[in-house]
Length: 152
Image (cartoon, rainbow, N blue to C red; front, side, top):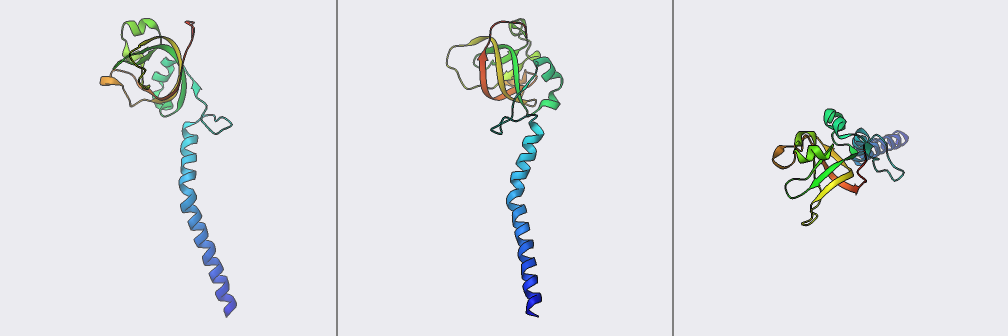
């Protein structure tokens, strides 16, 4: 009779251990699934490799790229309350904000920036920037690199 009680306790411990593992590891697995949903390719260190994409395509397929890391080239204008990335300098000069993206970057001081750049960050289709004028935004910018004025 004691033998049957021993087996039941062992099964009970196994059930408790399985439940505890599911509770403890569930959030980590959920985060991994969420990362995989937004990450097409990862680097060796596990970070999402940004997808290179044109501004026009990013805006046209905003839903497909929402929340993803992107690498975009364009003409940047960075100033207080007017930080945008446009396909061309002409779009910037004519302030065609619906053809551009709001850039959410840390304050740079008093010097505005007006030049071609390559930006890496996270695309957010819901963020329309200052007063809601832009077609979307690039947030969490981790690289903003000036490039030569060359055709994209």
